[in-house]
Image (cartoon, rainbow, N blue to C red; front, top):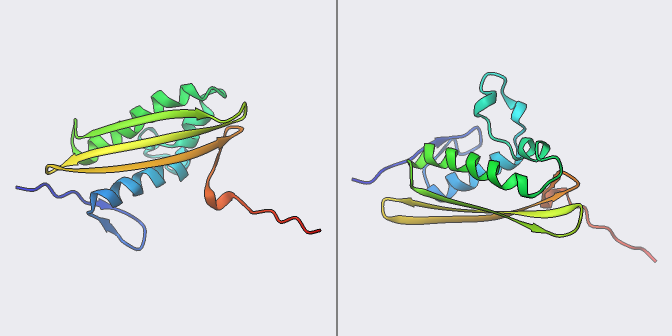
Length: 138
Protein backbone atom coordinates (compact mmCIF):
# COMPACT_ATOMS: atom_id res chain seq x y z
CA UNK A 1 0.00 0.00 0.00
CA UNK A 2 1.35 3.41 -0.98
CA UNK A 3 2.08 5.99 1.68
CA UNK A 4 0.38 9.33 1.14
CA UNK A 5 1.97 12.39 2.71
CA UNK A 6 0.16 15.72 3.06
CA UNK A 7 1.53 19.01 4.38
CA UNK A 8 -0.79 21.94 5.17
CA UNK A 9 0.21 25.41 4.02
CA UNK A 10 -1.07 28.94 4.41
CA UNK A 11 -0.76 29.54 0.68
CA UNK A 12 -3.21 29.30 -2.19
CA UNK A 13 -2.72 25.53 -2.33
CA UNK A 14 -3.71 24.67 1.22
CA UNK A 15 -2.57 21.05 1.17
CA UNK A 16 0.55 19.72 -0.58
CA UNK A 17 0.64 16.03 -1.48
CA UNK A 18 3.28 15.90 -4.22
CA UNK A 19 6.63 15.06 -2.54
CA UNK A 20 8.56 17.42 -4.85
CA UNK A 21 6.25 20.30 -3.89
CA UNK A 22 6.60 19.42 -0.20
CA UNK A 23 10.40 19.47 -0.42
CA UNK A 24 10.42 22.81 -2.24
CA UNK A 25 7.93 24.31 0.25
CA UNK A 26 9.98 23.19 3.26
CA UNK A 27 13.20 24.57 1.79
CA UNK A 28 11.50 27.88 0.98
CA UNK A 29 10.18 28.10 4.55
CA UNK A 30 13.60 27.21 5.98
CA UNK A 31 15.36 29.92 3.98
CA UNK A 32 12.82 32.73 4.43
CA UNK A 33 11.28 32.24 7.89
CA UNK A 34 12.80 33.94 10.94
CA UNK A 35 13.02 31.74 14.03
CA UNK A 36 11.02 34.27 16.03
CA UNK A 37 7.94 33.63 13.88
CA UNK A 38 6.42 31.66 16.76
CA UNK A 39 7.05 32.10 20.47
CA UNK A 40 5.01 29.00 21.29
CA UNK A 41 6.96 26.70 18.96
CA UNK A 42 10.29 28.56 19.07
CA UNK A 43 12.34 25.40 19.64
CA UNK A 44 10.68 23.64 16.70
CA UNK A 45 11.05 26.40 14.10
CA UNK A 46 14.04 25.91 11.80
CA UNK A 47 15.53 29.00 10.25
CA UNK A 48 18.58 29.44 8.08
CA UNK A 49 18.80 33.07 9.25
CA UNK A 50 19.08 31.86 12.84
CA UNK A 51 21.76 29.29 11.95
CA UNK A 52 23.79 31.90 10.07
CA UNK A 53 23.52 34.39 12.95
CA UNK A 54 24.91 31.76 15.34
CA UNK A 55 27.82 30.85 13.04
CA UNK A 56 29.96 33.86 14.09
CA UNK A 57 30.93 34.46 10.47
CA UNK A 58 32.34 30.95 9.92
CA UNK A 59 30.68 29.40 6.84
CA UNK A 60 31.75 25.85 7.77
CA UNK A 61 29.86 26.08 11.08
CA UNK A 62 26.61 26.50 9.12
CA UNK A 63 26.85 23.03 7.53
CA UNK A 64 26.22 20.84 10.61
CA UNK A 65 23.19 22.68 12.05
CA UNK A 66 21.65 23.08 8.57
CA UNK A 67 22.01 19.37 7.85
CA UNK A 68 20.60 18.40 11.26
CA UNK A 69 17.63 20.78 10.99
CA UNK A 70 16.65 19.66 7.50
CA UNK A 71 17.16 15.97 8.36
CA UNK A 72 14.81 16.34 11.34
CA UNK A 73 12.11 18.01 9.24
CA UNK A 74 12.24 15.53 6.36
CA UNK A 75 12.41 12.52 8.71
CA UNK A 76 9.30 13.85 10.45
CA UNK A 77 7.42 14.28 7.17
CA UNK A 78 8.60 11.26 5.16
CA UNK A 79 9.72 8.86 7.91
CA UNK A 80 13.11 8.01 9.35
CA UNK A 81 15.88 6.96 7.00
CA UNK A 82 13.93 8.06 3.92
CA UNK A 83 15.96 11.21 3.24
CA UNK A 84 19.55 12.06 2.38
CA UNK A 85 20.54 15.66 3.08
CA UNK A 86 23.79 17.06 1.72
CA UNK A 87 24.94 20.59 2.56
CA UNK A 88 28.12 22.05 1.13
CA UNK A 89 29.81 25.45 1.16
CA UNK A 90 31.37 27.13 -1.88
CA UNK A 91 33.45 30.08 -0.69
CA UNK A 92 33.26 32.87 -3.28
CA UNK A 93 35.30 35.54 -1.49
CA UNK A 94 36.03 36.62 2.08
CA UNK A 95 32.48 37.94 2.64
CA UNK A 96 30.45 35.76 0.26
CA UNK A 97 29.70 32.07 0.11
CA UNK A 98 27.14 29.80 -1.49
CA UNK A 99 25.28 27.24 0.61
CA UNK A 100 24.33 24.31 -1.61
CA UNK A 101 21.39 22.23 -0.35
CA UNK A 102 20.71 18.83 -1.88
CA UNK A 103 17.78 16.71 -0.72
CA UNK A 104 16.94 13.19 -1.85
CA UNK A 105 13.79 11.42 -0.64
CA UNK A 106 12.69 7.83 -1.18
CA UNK A 107 8.95 7.30 -0.91
CA UNK A 108 7.02 4.27 -2.15
CA UNK A 109 10.03 3.11 -4.15
CA UNK A 110 10.20 6.45 -6.00
CA UNK A 111 13.12 8.85 -5.65
CA UNK A 112 12.55 12.60 -5.42
CA UNK A 113 15.37 15.12 -5.53
CA UNK A 114 15.83 18.81 -4.99
CA UNK A 115 18.87 21.07 -5.11
CA UNK A 116 19.11 24.74 -4.29
CA UNK A 117 21.89 27.28 -3.83
CA UNK A 118 21.56 30.10 -1.33
CA UNK A 119 24.06 32.96 -1.44
CA UNK A 120 25.17 34.55 1.82
CA UNK A 121 26.88 37.95 1.72
CA UNK A 122 28.23 39.46 4.95
CA UNK A 123 26.03 37.13 7.02
CA UNK A 124 22.82 37.97 5.13
CA UNK A 125 20.91 35.73 2.75
CA UNK A 126 20.72 37.17 -0.75
CA UNK A 127 17.92 35.75 -2.87
CA UNK A 128 17.29 36.39 -6.59
CA UNK A 129 14.37 38.73 -5.86
CA UNK A 130 16.70 40.85 -3.70
CA UNK A 131 18.96 41.63 -6.62
CA UNK A 132 18.28 44.85 -8.44
CA UNK A 133 19.94 45.20 -11.83
CA UNK A 134 21.99 48.34 -12.27
CA UNK A 135 22.07 50.23 -15.53
CA UNK A 136 24.86 52.57 -16.50
CA UNK A 137 23.65 55.51 -18.50
CA UNK A 138 26.26 57.31 -20.55
